[in-house]
Image (cartoon, rainbow, N blue to C red):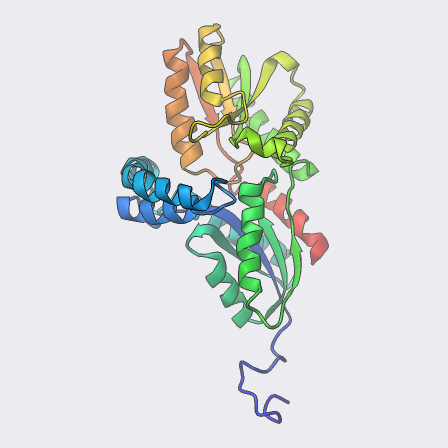
Length: 337
């Protein structure tokens, strides 16, 4: 028919019909260098979902101050966690893609699994263009942010929608915006903590540290804080922890505005000074280890705790490519397949 109407091969529509599961994560610089980090931060911090300051004022601050100072400091931190495979986040996300592909294929599902990054490479735009060229007409998008937040989940949707507005033929679309209370997510998270307890002993306090957000977001209707609290409640219930055995906190604040609290570093300092000298810390808002977990939590906050009198401090890794984490992803997307 394409030949009959004078269409070339790409203009014909008979080759469509492919289904793709697309994993989306935040992103990473291409290299642990000042230049690569500057490019990454410029894209990340220019997102109006991330920084809600009048654009002209923020661009002056961003390009006049932040991008002149922060890239070199951040590059040094990235160098401390970089591996032979590159960025840990990139390597883990690739492993998640491959294992999820295998899981769905083993289940007899004819589906393609791919991934992209909200900032950096592979970009949302170029990944979607590739999927379109391959004939994708059913797209299941899974942002790897367990708890919905506008600066993360909604920003991922923004980038995807921006590209899709240029398409003549849109795919059937399913966008999974949160899985903070999904039974398989809670089970996998609780099991990872239980395994740590079995290996190292139960700490005096379990710290569940979530990525920070400005408190203003909560007052404007962002449910992130509430979703984090629910994740904590479901996990500690499954573990059978009493109220005095755990605490929820928030890390990685930026700027002078008030952020969601209590702050992780201040919490760890207070625990050390109070004589709580044995803590384990886990980051339920992260699906893969990255700079914030491997450097900020593993190293910076360890120093905060030990300098305050703490003795035993251990970081419990993200779910990464654990089998139960991959099974959770598969169960999340199967209803849409």
